[in-house]
Image 1 (tube, helix red, strand yellow):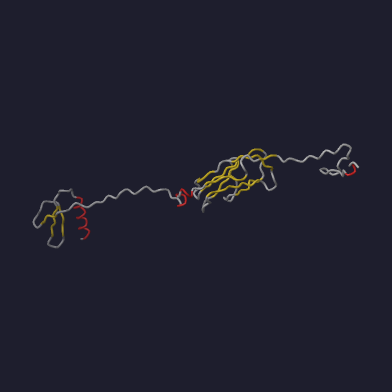
Image 2: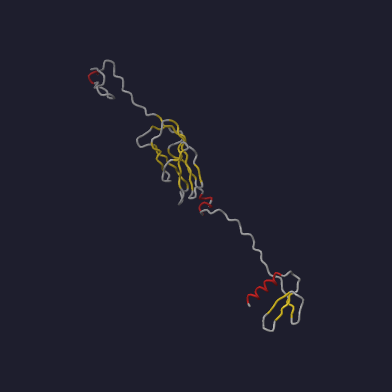
Length: 196
């Protein structure tokens, strides 16, 4: 019974505006709603227009970022402090170490990526990276700061440096008339050649 009433009410709501609606109560107590011309025992019903609401469009969502990234005062800057730009270095057993300076500081989730001659250097994401043994010649070192999503926050100015071949000390030339040094790289005892 309730289903029939619900169905009838739904049909009435779909009825075109301006059409008359009637309510008929049958002897068994059932109620009927109709838009047919009135019959005996039908009473007209005024159906008001339905209230409707149109929700405003939601605002566009901004990309998710940390509060530090939104604060212009926390925008980082990075510079390479070692090796210096234009430096001429000799290869050492410890290798060459790259160092960067970040201001104001690295925040959680940020990391520093060093690239040497276009290839990424293996590092822990900190401000120091071991470049290892490098080939002789000129090299270009770059560094940048990435956030936790991989977006670049800052980039250092590239540094160019030269790895040169080590200079070997030459054996000193002995004095005229002096015997050759028995040990390469050491001078002979010259006291016997001093003037009285």
